Image (spheres, rainbow over the protein chains, first blue to last red):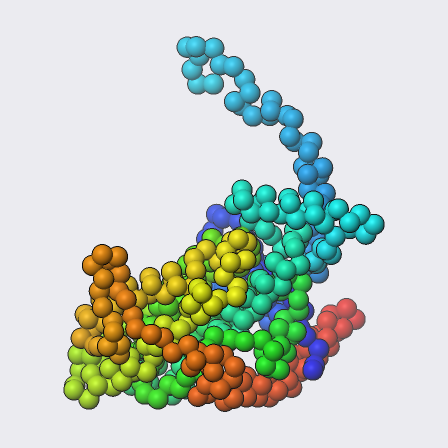
Amino acid sequence: MSESWPQWEIFVRSEAGLAHKHVGSLHAADARMALENARDLYTRRNEGVSIWVVESTDVHAIDPSEAEAFFEPSQDKQYRHPTFYHVPDGVKHL
Amino acid sequence: MYTQMSDGIDGNPNAADEREGAFNARLDRAVKIESPDWMPEAYRKTLLRQISQHAHSEIVGMLPEGNWITRAPSLQRKAILLAKVQDEAGHGLYLYSAAETLGTPRDEMVAALHSGKAKYSSIFNYPTLAWADVGAIGWLVDGAAIINQIPITRCSYGPYARAMVRICKEESFHQRQGFDIMWTLAHGTPEQHAMAQDALDRWWWPAVMMFGPPDSESVHNEQSLRWKIKLFTNDELRQKFVDQVVPQSERLGLKIPDPDLRWNEATQHYEIGQVDWDEFYRVIRGDGPCNRERLQARIDAWDEGTWVRDAAAEYARKHAARSVA
């Protein structure tokens, strides 16, 4: 069997004004082919106006086992939310 | 990117149990499992089998319909069929992409198909003898697929559920174009009507079998239901299909080839006659009308494409080297 092509993660911007969103992956020999394959695979029905392709090996993520500790610092800071504060009766536009 | 966590932790035999408890609790809270998360090895294996076989089915499924692309009766029908077959390729690729998140490379899955180790849906081992078969496949086979697949959009494994959302959106076009072909033929000349009836006669039972063996014989049902990989049993889904398709066949003016088919007023469901499960198992085992032909076509496509894949890889390598220089 011949060598396999690298895997690419695909991100599609569905319309101007929205961020690119991860839609899946595919295999391609190079970035140009990844873009063209992504067009044929993920935008056959006008789902996109822009595509990003990133080699899967270039994506770094946290290990799920450390997720709890990793996100812990934001758990006890309710004062970051407006609902933390008492608004006296009759006060408007706050 | 998606590396699989290994099962259990070295030196702590209880860790795997604790993880399994946390995993089950997560399923109970209906929180999706994502690719890097810990999962029991059996859950991973079951998903890999199901998703990769689903992918293989989409890819092999291009063959019976591809058979009619050059002989479609009009340019529009040809363009529609081409788009439909291209969608099936897309569905296969969405699913391979989802299956790869479980840590198995795509080439391994393809090799398992070509060696005969991995299965694909039994339905694609039947021949497409006439143009009406393209209509019957869209109407019945894609119709059955929709009923099978819609619940999977809510399954416990995130990548599979998301792939299924994309697929279900596109299947609806497949089903309607098939029904449209059947409608046109059923309202055409007597010969065309007969052709539509003949296609229904041949595709009805294989479509009914697509939901898999009856619940009493299904080996995967119970565990998959517990893991929320499956949300309804084979028989429940089959019943839904029959209840939807029988009235559609009446509107088409075509007759379902089952003398025992009847409406049960008490249950408000249609009841069908005995399914020939021997035939189903025969086709699964490899003795359907087209098993060898289908598999050989896939192997040939892979082998004959080797030089293209190699050339593209070499081009990419040279191009990258040149841009560095």
